[in-house]
Image 1 (tube, rainbow, N blue to C red):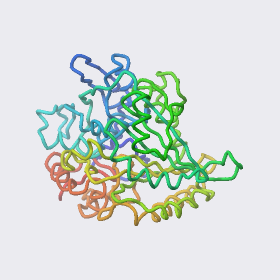
Image 2 (cartoon, rainbow, N blue to C red; image 1 turned 180 degrees about the vertical axis):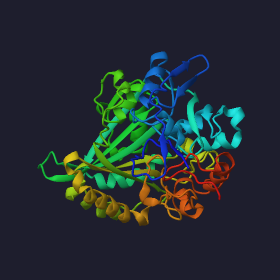
Image 3 (cartoon, rainbow, N blue to C red; image 1 turned 90 degrees about the vertical axis):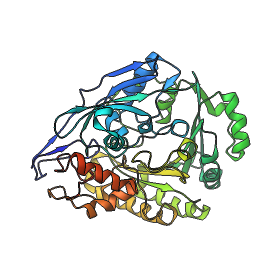
Image 4 (cartoon, one colour; image 1 turned 180 degrees about the horizontal axis):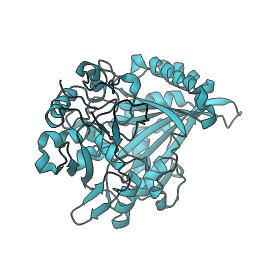
Length: 432
């Protein structure tokens, strides 16, 4: 039986025993913005950067709440939920999808009305490559100020980073919806003595001015010590470039670069994810830092992203993406290595495994949740060469990505693609 594979984050070779077709959507890149109606139709092959660029060309006060990686494809991003710097204010990208055009297994082109409520629910967060080929998405745009404020405050262990990271946990998810904050943990050389140390970079984007932000942060998180000199005002579109550590003032055309490497992921990398529901003790962070001194951690990082805000208000069954109320923050783990080191890739994978195992007591449990857009075959995979996918096999990873929404996704898959035409290692299986 022929399989159709539409998964941008997994790779396929001729070792794949079942005949398959990979659908390349790169030429479906149209972006049509309607400022008057505050909507946009965007084709699945466009990147997030191309979407943001076209919105910015038409309006400085409209935005879309998707991610910060401007080379990420729109189709895959929305299929998995899609969170970014506006999600505490407006929810996920998938929460703001209002229509779509999809080719189903019969070759029909369906919109929201003709595909029905269940299928429209499934494609907005249920993961790509399971239900059909989404050609285009109609998105609801959201209002933002003409200028937003971006800040970064970096502290090393010698500058009290451990206590600040620990305190951030109490505060970040309770901040006003207009503030997005995150922490990037990485290894650096200390500016004081050139010795290796760990640095925590506290970054944020505020939907308002510097004059509003500084006193607010002085009230809510005075220990961080944010001052005006830490802040830069810019458009919302420009703030997304800063969020990926591009220099302040970089050209907006940078959003159109489809091949630029991310600062978080170089040529080769491994990523994993977690969700934190209870405060992690300070001693746990102290036990974590030595792992960043290991050889494999030269280009490793952990990113903490604060939840709360709008995410507390949306039911976990509203879309397949279930990680809503009760989460303090998410964690993204990344370890990178260069091409010449790829022959030793197992040592980097091993480092990731050690860090992930160390964090086990401090993150979500039963299941240990994961974000489907950070595809992670370590948590389970389907036997792709077997036409009869095992529901029990898929349930192992499915509950981690989708929690109790996995059952509804399986029901919808069985109804719309019972022969499992659209599939990959972590596609939703039909019931036999």
